[in-house]
Image (cartoon, rainbow, N blue to C red; front, top):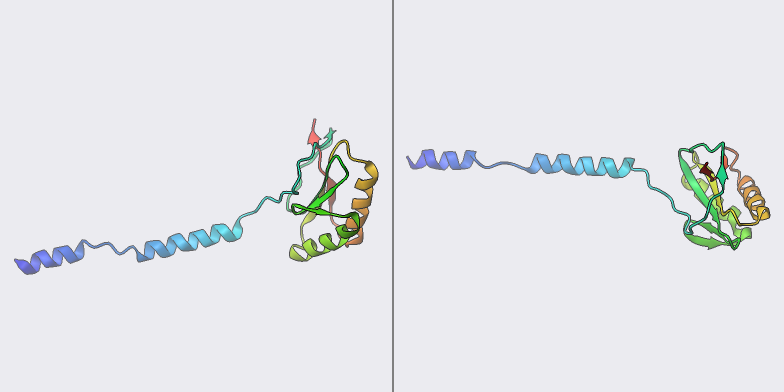
Length: 134
């Protein structure tokens, strides 16, 4: 009688080790495949456009605020340092495109200068200007 009770008690234990292995493997899978949203570090009021298109795989995000300050990866960057910052980001993800978020009240010359710096950093793929669809 004692043997039967002891055997039943042993059989009722649940081995959760394989379950934990599966959970950790799924967690690692989701972390590796997740797409993280890049933020420029400043809020800009983007202009409206009728021909706005959504861009995929954006790895370089540059913002120009209303006081013509340039922001890359939440850091204020001088115009002369834009090319170096873009080259560094380009090495991290060579397939991604670049997007410029320019404030509607920012000077156009800064937008053109930043665009030229991005082109000088050998980003020849897609360089887009972020707008709101009207």
